[in-house]
Image (cartoon, rainbow, N blue to C red):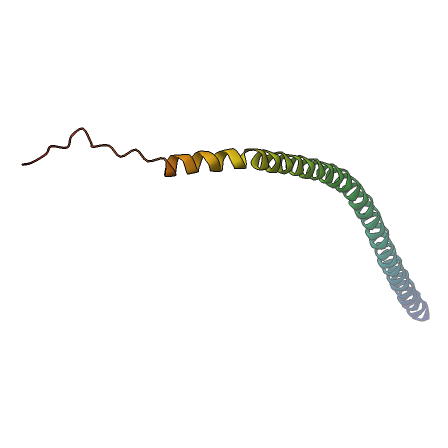
Length: 118
């Protein structure tokens, strides 16, 4: 009977050791999963920073060229305005003289469809 109780006792101890090893393995697995998650997050952050940096570089290239284009357009606009002001100043006197001549030079005439009724 004592051999049976010793056998049962050994089985219980073996079961207890198996549970402990199982718990330990679960802890190691959890720790490894947490570590893998942290490593993955670090990789994602690094990739995100790299892509963000590439995006900013491309954006600065595009925005830089856009600012050059807007500067060129501004220069062209200013040149055109100066040209128009010069043309205005040059032709203003002649246009005013022509308008005054048309308005002030009146030749009264009888319309061809007018019939005298007497």
